[in-house]
Image (cartoon, rainbow, N blue to C red; front, side, top):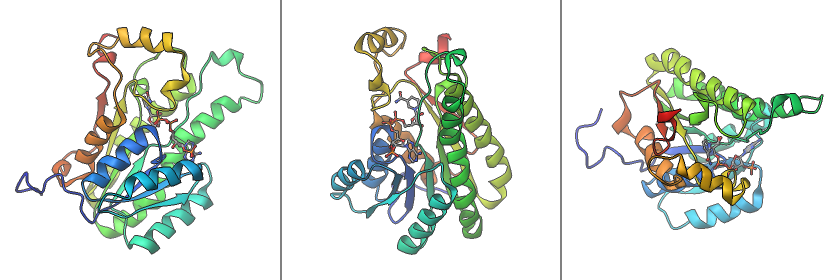
Length: 259
Ligand SMILES: NC(=O)c1ccc[n+]([C@@H]2O[C@H](COP(=O)([O-])OP(=O)(O)OC[C@H]3O[C@@H](n4cnc5c(N)ncnc54)[C@H](OP(=O)(O)O)[C@@H]3O)[C@@H](O)[C@H]2O)c1
């Protein structure tokens, strides 16, 4: 429990797994936490991007490492979690940020329905695999912080059509609340950050006109930046948020207010 604002947001000596922590929102979270003193374990597949991220994080006090991980592969997740435990001895923070989008009307999907299954498997099942593996360690530890990066699309139909994505994110919001309820007695906090449009590789897939059209619908008048999501993640990872669990915090410049 916090007693002073001087140390409330400090992450010195804490170890954080950040899936997709090499780029976009995930890198904003990695960098914000590294600036507050955390050791960062980046879980993703792209080795080149991860190496660039490690280079940028090298100037901070905490030690950043890369663990090649495909979050759709349970054995791979388990090996990476074990490797983090061997390297750092503990895991204090898990950020389930890695995700993919799936666009277009579902009736236009090819018959293998891969678009649906791929999106659910990364965005929802990927987070569940790591909650399961890291949750066991946190229960033993008697403490932990889990942060699921969902989306304002978890509670609304966004533009354009993103049905599997919306469903995965709605599921992840629900998983957040169920695990918060289940794991409260172990002092494991489980919360979600639900961003709106934020600059990243994912959001830059859309043409410029789409960004302009969407920006007009954001009351605050601009996209979010990854470091702004990182600031909220620092709060949820730190002692400052000890009594908060099961919350889904929307951070979207007011976009979802009028939907
Ligand atoms: N940007 C937005 O406007 C926005 C809005 C709301 C919510 N979000 C959410 O924020 C999160 C980050 O999105 P972003 O915009 O920063 O996207 P991004 O720049 O495209 O980054 C996505 C990250 O997810 C990782 N990833 C994807 N599939 C993976 C897999 N199978 N295993 C491990 N890692 C995987 C990628 O790493 P590798 O490819 O190297 O594996 C990458 O680091 C996502 O969950 C997204 O849904 C984004």
